[in-house]
Length: 232
Image 1 (spheres, rainbow, N blue to C red):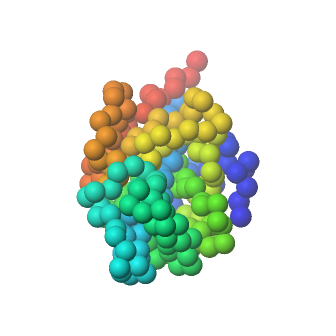
Image 2: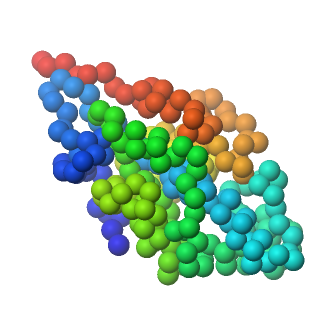
């Protein structure tokens, strides 16, 4: 497993076929520095909510469930716990099970968009994801999912951490509305990725949303780019 300390100030690799994975030539004198983008995995790239509901209904066909349009709040287990005390643990058992993460479907357009993003000039893209505490299957399956959908080259671009605030970047695209941690003022701007559980939230300016991967994510990236530096 990759240690978090190696990613606090992420360094792009300089080899391989994906120039935009931070692997092409470094910025030349007078050019812009590379924009660093962190992209969450569950709920942004992988369909966590849809995968969970499908497996919950298959395993517990006689138990009540929450339709995606009725989901509210980031924590699935908390909302299920309000339906019945035992349902919280049953919900947790789904994503703690073998093959849950590896079998998640990609969200529409996610893989294509992030591959395009990774190939933009002066752009370093990392998949920044939080493993669950019951780590028997989750970390391995997250790596396997990325390799399956993005190819082995992208394995260098994975950051596993329970605290995203300590990772240095310009942007974090994530479906969780409240991201807190040890760093009170993270270096990144949090762009909320719209999901079934957060679509009802009203964001206060200057907070921004990315509605889906068909939304203009390039405009969000461009808004964060600094102009080229001038030689003195």
